[in-house]
Image 1: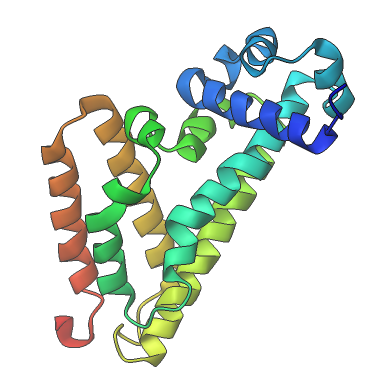
Image 2 (image 1 turned 180 degrees about the vertical axis):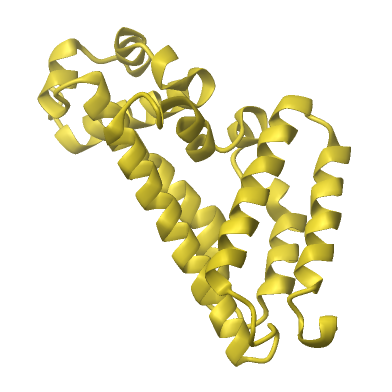
Length: 202
């Protein structure tokens, strides 16, 4: 008889739910389909989650948040020049993101657009994750100031908010158009903007 592993069961539910949410949105995700695809019964679901919303919150915290951190936070943890690091990230992004992200876009932005006005639990959690991202980028730009790569008068918080919004917009439009020209345009124009953050625009 197979030994039950509750943690593996929970992880299977989360991974399957994440894939369904990413492809169809939270509202389009069906718990019965998640169970079917993961080969589990309703009892397994209710052992770990009280509701579909509870599952969605867990997907956001345990699947989407780590993805955002691995794609957008970890690569910048120990860099000195944020401008060059951001441009390098954009050049290599296609190699590092999961294929589903190229097809369906950023799962965090998708969820923000879909659920922020419909569910306060999602809105608060999504806002917290975006703040976490902004704070990480702001710290990166502050370090860039200290190292002489960024002008001392730059508002690191404002720049971080703008850059993240631009990145999410670029990914969203690329999801719709699936056109490499769109990504090249975003990369080139972000490079122009980021160059203005250099001391003497150098």
